[in-house]
Length: 380
Image (cartoon, rainbow, N blue to C red; front, side, top):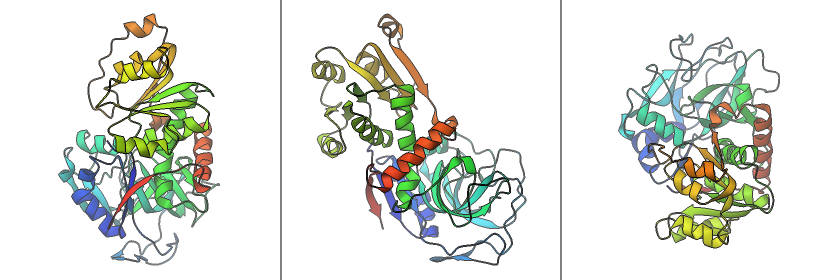
């Protein structure tokens, strides 16, 4: 897969309509598409109607409730208590991209410990693709989607650190691919001044995952050598920048010379084209036969290669299974080499205080240009 984020600069309604019709097909080549819903008029929780500035659908003429509940991302079996409708990308059964449809679903309800966001940009993550392809929807109004950024239009009564009109980016295991999103306040981050909302939507998962793999789990230190599998992926792009800034020597696997050239500009020291070269042999050549200190592997099907490229007593962090294959692995060589393996699933980590603070810090670095959230292309 290519690594770079793409941005769909469409109106709110047209963005989701195009996403349903073609977006997931485009994602075969692009791990992050950005659905950008356009600009909105503010809607306060206790005032009258409002319409999207470029999409003539009334999305609310009653006060927005702030009692507990969910919407598209509620748990299976709970009932909606709000009868207004929004546009969203939903599906009735798992399968290929054409199972998605553009439909009206009930507005989500702002939970007591959360906020309601009017979505301006939604990132399509690898997990979104896996869920759509393999997970039956738990209820008819289920909305997939991990990441979205937008404006807060309602605040739960137990929330003290968020305010109406604040720009935030958010993460949850569902609910982002819609006009409105209800999410726990602990899974939101203020968007710093100067940071584009599309970049803000894409950053928490890709950079949060990369940082956690490199440092919290991988223990990377200055002067060490790290191999990043799928360096042109969303996590790979982030990991290259973070590892370089930490003073590490950075190797990464890529598919083709064109991608390698782009990544060198982000801090990559050596690109290994896995289609043209033996990865393990190349790593050993570059490290004088020693192997790398750390491997970050978001692919899964490359785990055996990752272990073979690792030095004795080295560390392997595997995160996800983008390759989609069975994770069959011979661990006897790793045992004999005293290597350490760490698994990472960020769905349970991003709202932990230390991880949350790290993402906040990286959002600020992106706003000042010290980190780059790459947008590959825009679609008219």
